[in-house]
Image (cartoon, rainbow, N blue to C red; front, side, top):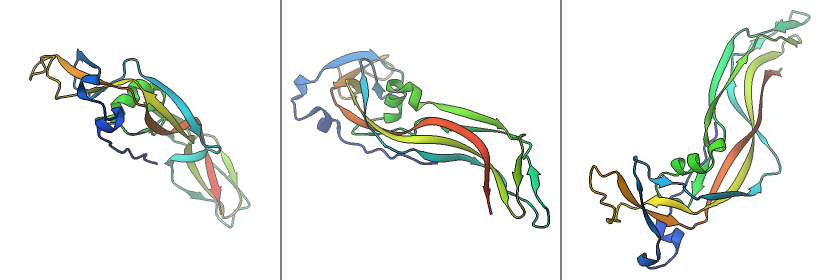
Length: 194
């Protein structure tokens, strides 16, 4: 499975070289998260022209005997595979980008399960192999994200002492850049080869 790397850039680079007094702060209920997406706006800026296939499951291979005129093969088992819909990553975000992506892009940041009953058959020629596979067809996509709130442990006007329910968050205008290999469709089949 592919992994999209993220790069951490200091928050000061994102909000520019403005004095601290120009930043917008808010006190928000804290539940352990580093980033909140309140009035966040996100949009797609670029999409690859081609898709690619992510084989999320490869089962055992079966070979039709070379002495047989042909073979009918069914694996005969059910397979459930968990996978990430978007394989998302962030560039230019401090803290925990996965939290922000899950809030700002919930449909692309989720994990789901694909279940297939490989009870259907395929016909093989002598010496040919068959392998049950589950495939997610993905497209590389890039976008921008702006107006999100990032937890600032140095902001002390919210009573953010140990045990307090509120913390100081600074608003980051952005935009930051996100990338993902987004699912467009999925399918299962028997991969055949000689």
